[in-house]
Image (tube, rainbow, N blue to C red):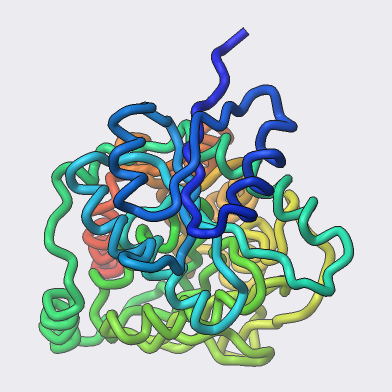
Length: 356
């Protein structure tokens, strides 16, 4: 039997530490090796207790969770699951934390939510197990990704000529680790690329903030999708949380249908739902890409796109936070090629420039 995953719980509330610790100990595959009230205490306990995964409160005195991550990850990279309140401010900070190196996050339940605590604890237990297998080694040699550098790059790319070619729609799917992977890829695109439809596994309330963040960093227009939004060159549409998004043909144009629906592969939005629709609507006039994530959502959808004549890629294992989704797509024959994250945007641009 494998050894339990060693977890350090970091929260300034002693009561929250106690609740989280008891909830995690209900799973014998998890071992809470200690708690810390702030990042300074956490730093000492990381060295002393050698945890494999941290749970980290977003808002704490003395140093918030994001500041702590920015100091921790380049020196001592560890998988981290953030614990965030589902508010606009909490959501923004959670996205900052993902950018700073966190693997994932869970949202604290509302006080009037029956069963909310147990659902949150189950989600936290699951995400800790995923985090324990995540690859965070690249944070040791992290390049400068400050907003000023990214915006300068985007302005340069925005001046490139508009692509004119047969590709009309691009579909991207991601889960764990995907927020940063998508940022990396989208920053590599000039404004004139074909319209993009994106599924990133996220709950309601976070997808709009995520889209707004990408919009501020990229040359593209990035927005949370609304029903009947057109898929236009230079625009990226992010599927809203708790909605399924499909691409449909509308005359000579393409648009998205965004509607409440049942989860597929346990997800709403689902990458498979999006990519199957792109295969049907656009056929060979499309490109599909599956990025880092746990599970197999997107594998069948990417295969459907490839069978319809589309170009397809999946992120390679060495650059994935979690290789689950790309591996499933590759094993099923959905991906033409496994590609390092930094090479995905250039590979897509080469496909777009091809005269076929």
